[in-house]
Length: 419
Ligand code: STR
Image (cartoon, rainbow, N blue to C red):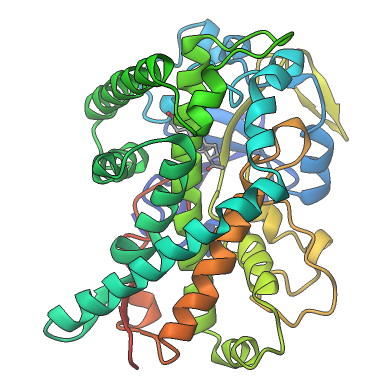
């Protein structure tokens, strides 16, 4: 499984890149994908699709109304050639929510979430994020003390629980449920989970979220889930299904991607000590670390999927009606046309501004972008302030990625807190 892609010849349409579900060599995969052109033919666990690998083309297609999220537009789905047996179906068929709907209905589903995440609202929740961060830094110190060799997993003790607490607070999901949710999402994203098990855990999550929404309907509290339920004068209220859809999208997106952002930033700095020095000396702001990490080692490798409502001409190519289109954000972050010849280098001193697209673009642009920047902007400086001699406990080659196809998440990140 160490070959990320096996190029296959497809007689009529040229080479197809078969994406390895258990990819470990992400850089190799990304380079091959980028080399395959702006609009590349890929195969995801037996399912063909096109993927966008360039910044400028993604910018154009992500505002094209002829590409929609509605799975019923997908030819393979209409013809029953893709079913719930396909391990990635849960990335697309995720219930009605702002993640799966377009146009005016999308705006209706998304408005309250955007309003809950404005810069002013984010400033209001900053103190709570700071408090969670301090508590988890204490937990890190305790874990290290209790372990024989001083090694502690930065992921399970810090980077994973922090975003879960933040999104839990925002959406009104109690702490008692956090371990269950983290466990289930890790199993959901892992390609080693058998599909029956994945479908079962998604069904269990639906029951959990539906119960939560019913409870909040009976007794609204001060959280976004309650705000989504409460009807507003004039506006069409969201249905229970829509509230559940938004809630699960927020919890899944809000925690899984932010784990990657925090861990990948720490890892990038620890493997580039000269750059870490500049940050700790105050020469370069943490915001630059965050933006360069989002570009260079983005949490979302591939985003599934949009579908063409009609033939779409792209240069000399056509996206045929009914075709599925993936956005390969990692390849886009490494686009030399956008980021220069050294796009593959992590460099917080690069002279040009980092104009990445890792939060997407257009109407579906990540509503939590500001929140994740605030989280990472608190977590990273606090971590290095408390543990300035922090280092990886194993050589970088030994840090393994989770067997996950669409997300860029580590299995674990063993560190030593005191050098
Ligand atoms: C996971 C399963 C689920 O119940 C709901 C969703 C909707 C939002 C999706 C999420 C999914 C998977 C991870 C996504 C997230 C939106 C942003 C996040 C795709 C399908 C990213 O990785 C960017």
